[in-house]
Every structure is written in structure tokens, then in C-alpha cells.
Image (cartoon, rainbow, N blue to C red):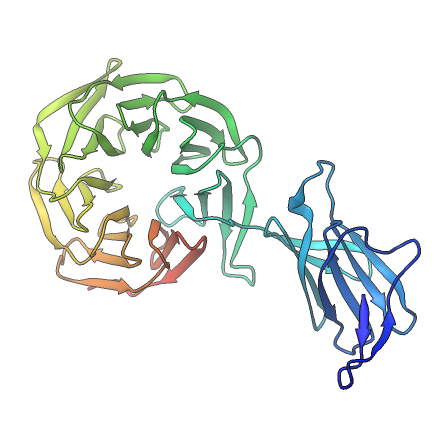
Length: 400
């Protein structure tokens, strides 16, 4: 570490310690507010506090782990007032306690596009996200200073992109481009891994834990332990989305032929209900959601249109939700079944009113490059995730 005169450019000092110097490249340096000390972060996974006058190390923070990995390299830092922060290559931000030499807190999150979101129940304060690099996180949302705190789910995760997630009670389900579905508790991911045989695109779970999975070839149904209940093989179209009713008796499958079809799940089979074909969408079905009451289905398509169907009659009850300009990626109903939130490739989020279909609230440019998931964190709070690797919670004015 070299110190220079800011006016003349003359070298003043070289900070070096015979036995406490960094053993890797130094990526970041920050001054203390009184300019008496320096904070340095290094590729050797340590952070050091230097006394400038004494030209010595007064504190070392060792952030390495038992497993030798570049993720613990410290690549950036900040000394802001009483707060000392160091940024790891993994993206984790460590708050450092200069008195104890320990890490006081670690802020974690996604570093790649977030591709999946699930919320335990409408208006739940805990939700789960999955990303392009196969990581899964649990977020505990609150109204204190730490409004949302993320914790990586424990255990073996997916080998690559998580395409979809669902939750039922304390069970979390995730599907990935590694052609597996993982069945886990909210505390641990990867407790049970089930190969799907082909790439899963979409998942949906009933409150009792029945999971349905739409793959590029078929539709599969499982109980909460990973035991397969039924398979819909060779359906005659390419499944693109799936939803299950709260009673776990009816499965809606969206296809690339612009249609959604209903199947009865019983006796180890998925049986077509021919009188309940939902065919008003104008593009391939890209998102499905059944209302918590089990009475309505919202179906979004590749043209940016959303239609709402009455599941009792199959009739279309809403045709006016046409203001997305690109593929609808995600849909979620509010707990009372009166509002729907949608997220799209067009970067926008909309909140819609079922009883007043012409009323809507728009959140423009919610996520750069597209919104991949939406849900409800409260009566008037919406969660969204996107290609920009961020999780956002919005307080919305419901359309009336």
C-alpha cells in the first residue's frame, strides 16, 4: 500500500507489515473518517485495518471458509461513519466490528437474474426466490429497518437455472433446467430430488402439497414427498404452464396452441374434462393462476394479454386486461380473490380489479429487461423479481 501527497504526487509511505501483510492482491482501500486509518480488502479473503501513523496492522478480519473458493475474495469496501463494510466476490456484504474483529452481519442475495418467485400464501411475510445460477433464497419481509432479509436455502441446490418454484405450508418445491424437481422444507432445499425426464417449465402446488409440473413433453403430478401420482403423456400439444385448484382435484394445463385445458386428477390419472376448454387467449399460454377460492383462472399469454375464466362454466369473464406489450411471465391473485398482479417481459407490473376490469394500476419499468415473478406480500404490497437480479416490494393503491 503506497501513500502519496495529494498535491505533489510525491510518495510518502509504503505500508507493509512483516508478518501481517496481505498475501493476495489488494482490491480496495478506504479511509476512516478522521484519515488516521485505512481499510483494505484483498484476494486473500482478509480485510485489514491499518494505523497510518504507526504504519502497522491493528485488526485483521479473516473471511475465508474451509472450502477454498474464490467467492470469499474481498473485492470492495467502505468506511462510512461507524460502519465498515467489505464486499465479497460472491456478492455478500460483510459488516465488520472493529472492536471484536468479527463479522457483525452479512447481507446476502442473488447475483444473477431472478427467474422464480413463490410466496407461502397470499399476503405472506416470507417468500422464496430462485435465480439463473441455481441459487435459492428465503426472504423474511418486515417493517423494521431490515425490511427484507435473505438467507440462502441450505443443502444441495440446482445445477443451473431455477425455472419455477411453489410452496405449500412448510414444503418448498423448485424446478430447474437440470431436469429435476426438488422437494424440501422451508429450512432446507434439496431434501428429495426427483428427475423429471425432460425440462420442467412451470410448477403449481395446492395448499395440501400436491404439486403439478409442466415439462416440455408432459405434465406430472406428485404428493408433497415426491411420490408421483400421475403423468399426462403425449397430450397432443406442448405444455407451457400449469395450475392446480385449491382442492387439488383439477389441473389446468396451458399450451403453445393458445389454449388451456382442464384435467381431473384422481385414481392415478389426469383425465381431460372436455367441457372445460379455455380457448380465448391469442398466444401461447405463458402464465396461469387459480384464485384462492378456486372459482377463477387467470391466463396470460405470449402476446401480453390476460383472460380470466370462470372455472365453473368455462366462460370468459374478463377480456380487457390487454395492456402489457410483451409476454406475461407471472400472475398472482390477492388473498380475497378480487385483484390480480401481473409481471411481463415489457418491464411493467399491473394490478387489476376483477369486479371492475377496466380499472388498473401500472408500475412502469419495474425491472430492467423484464419482470419474471410477482406475488402479494400484504393487502396492498406486491413483490416482484426480475432480470436485474433484484427483489422489490411495492406499496400499491388498489384500482377501484
